[in-house]
Image (cartoon, rainbow, N blue to C red; front, side, top):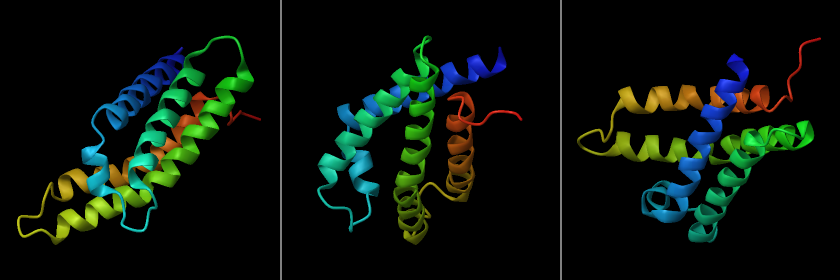
Length: 128
């Protein structure tokens, strides 16, 4: 029951984030590292990836699809971590400190937790 609730919450989180990437890409473009090619396309497709992963987690009938969604969202969270690190570095370099450590440290800690949650609620990690 707890796992199902967390799965729904994670799916809603990713669906909202996916929508935000598509509807208002500017904040995401600002934190995209300079070495990322075609940043507008990357931000758009990351939104699509989030929406697809959320849909896969929410569907009730295929364990394989939920697992694929969990793996996909875990890989997604790993792949966007450089943007989060870039945002952290850019903010800390600002004279006013940007959003500060109180925002960025929990965000850095949250990334591996999101990876683990996606794998857990997707049914990829099973108890022996």
